[in-house]
Structure formats: C-alpha cells, structure tokens
Length: 204
Length: 204
DNA sequence: CCAAATTCCAACCATTTGGTTGACTTCTCC
DNA sequence: GGAGAAGTCAACCAAATGGTTGGAATTTGG
Image (cartoon, rainbow over all chains, first blue to last red; front, side, top):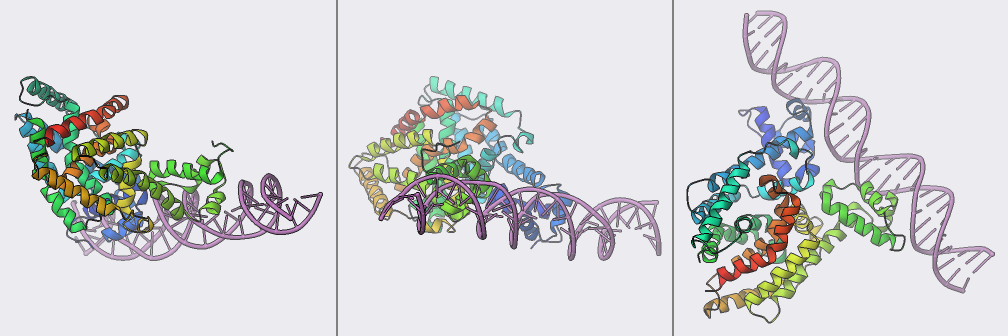
C-alpha cells in the first residue's frame, strides 16, 4: 500500500490523514490507519504515542493548509477587490485538490472545542492582518471605490461562496440528484462565477 | 432530565437528537443518549432496535427540516428575487434556532454515502421544483430582469451565503478570535446583509 | 564485524461499547 | 380484581478497540 522508499513516519501520517479526513476522529480505527499504511498497529504508537496525538498532528496540518493562504492574500498591497480575487482563485484551486479539507476541519473543530485544539498553534499575526484588511475595506467604502458594506460580512460572503459548495456536495447530490461528475464541472466553474458575482455586488 | 409527561419514545428521540447532533454518529455512545433521556440503556433498544435505526430517524428528521422549506420557497408564484428573499429569511431564521443542523447533516451525509442514507425518503417533487426554478431564472435573465447568471450557481450562491457562516462558526472564532457572543450578533445581521448583497449583485 | 540502538511485529491486555436477557413493575381492559 | 400486555431495568455478554509487551529483525557506527 505504501512505498518502502518514504519513511515509515511519513507513511503513517499520509495514511492517518486519509482515514481521519474520511471518517473523522471518532469514526477512525487505529487498525484501519495501520492497514492503510501497510504496517503493524503497534508502530502507530511507537511513532505517535496515542490516537489523540496522531490526530492532533493531522488536524494541525489541515489548519495550516487553510489559514496561511488567507493571510497571504489579505496582506498583499493590492486593492480590496484584487485581494479578494486572489483569495477566490487560490482557495478554489486548493479545494479542488483537497475537497475534504473544510468539512473535516469544521466538524472536528466544532467537536473538540479546546480538547486537542487548544494546543494547535495560532498564527499570532492573524488578528492584525484581519484588522488591517477590515480597515482597508472601510476606507475603500468611504472613498466610493466599494459599495458600502460591513467588512466582516464581506469576508464572510467571500468565504461562503468559495467554501460552501465543497462542503455541500453530499447534500446537493441528494437534493438535486445531480450526478457527481456534473457537480465537479460546476465546482470547476466556481472561481469565475464567484468573481463575476462579487464584482457585480461590490462595484458601486 | 426529562418530563414524565412526554412519552418515553419522544424523550429518547430528543435526547438522541441532541447527542447525535453534537457528536455525530460515530462519536455518540448509546449510554450517553440513555443518560440524557433519563432512562436505562435497554430502553433504547426496546423502542428503536439499534443505534443505526435510531440514528436514521434523527438524520431523517433533520433532512426533512431542511428540504421542505427550500421547496416551498422555490415553488411559490413570486419573482426570482422575491423567492430568494423568502429563502434567505426563512432559512436564516431556522438556522438561528437550530445552528447544528447543517454541519450535522453535511458530515453524516458525507460519511454514509448510502449506508443509512439510502433509506431516507427523498421528496420526489424535489427535482421538478428545482428544474422549474432554473427555468424561471433563465427566463428572467433573458427578459433583462436579472443580471445574466447560471441558475445552478445562483442557487449555490444563495445557499452558501446563508448556511456557511453557521458551519464556519468554530473556524471563525479560531481564526479571527472573535468572541462567541459577538459572532451571534453578526449572524443575526446576516439576513439583511445577504439580501442587500444579492440585490446589488443580481439587479442589472 | 560486532554490539548498541533503532525499527518492527505477533500476541496479549484492559476497557469500552452495542446489544441481550430474564425478571420485576405498571398499565389496560374485561 | 386479575390476567395479559407493555414498559422498565440491573446484570450480563461478545465483539471491538486503544494500547502494551517482549523479543525478533535491521540499521548504525565505532
């Protein structure tokens, strides 16, 4: 199941990532992770002391895959609209590659209010970047470059439009009985559509 | 923990709903449901043969809390914009009361591709209603009443803007370090903000 | 080349968990 | 009031699950 080339530790991490993301913490069996990694169950405990510890690494990785890109896009020196365009295209590209990411993170974060999560490092530059961006939005609104809108809601709008369709996939294919392949096409068009919609809604 | 007034069966259902929604299927212990309902664990199996069966009832209830409202809003005889306004305000109101609903449904649906889910009834009127709405959007676009937009994406936009913030709550309070109470306020303003944004983005 | 350290595993262990059983209690209805 | 049905539970069970152990295989480095 796994190359002998790559280190056992890395093997385990990739196996754990796959299983945890598919089934969540509670739904994951250590045996299944071991099988997926092609090793003995005892190895898991040899490299990562416990299920919790192993999970923490995976969840941490997942969060660090999400947050930095947001920070990078928001802290460039572009205009609000250009920043949002960066955000939309970068994020959609990421999610097309890693569709399980958001639902996994949201679900586990909602469960574990502080259990494992407390230990996961928060980038301390998050808040200032956020505040600066909010400031910029307010300014551009005042300058008439943007339709008047509350910064928090603007960010929520953008994140919603990008992320939700990936989370909603199982629901959509249920309610709309849309074949999976067709929905993939829709997802791929998302960047453009969202950008069009944003411009229409934001330019005064 | 529970009134002797209400039937045991209903007691169990409400307890199961609470625990399943908080912890998901895999994370839920039958003992915990029993405790929450204030009864013996054997009772759970007396009324609902197994954990799966009990869960199916809860998930089914949850889905039926979501889907019909969507159908009702979309199949009235109003204009597209008015339908969407109904949708936004009805849905936001629902989610303010039941904030766990979407994440629960999405997560379990993504897990159980067909296991329990196959048995849950789909309203057969779903697809026609959807298609009719898509048709109407296309018409109003042609008539110049709406900015040109693909119907699927329009619906995705609206659902995203409504639902995502509720799902994202744990992530937001993490990334933005926004106190929970403050985020509740933001959530409450959502209806208005989303409607403003939709109008701005849709009226040509 | 060999000994110490690291890597690996089959078998095992303690606990948890979904589910069952058999008896006891409480209704129901003639 | 009493017999049968429905409701309730303490105790129990088998399987699953996270984790451990003692030693075998392999790598490392002097």
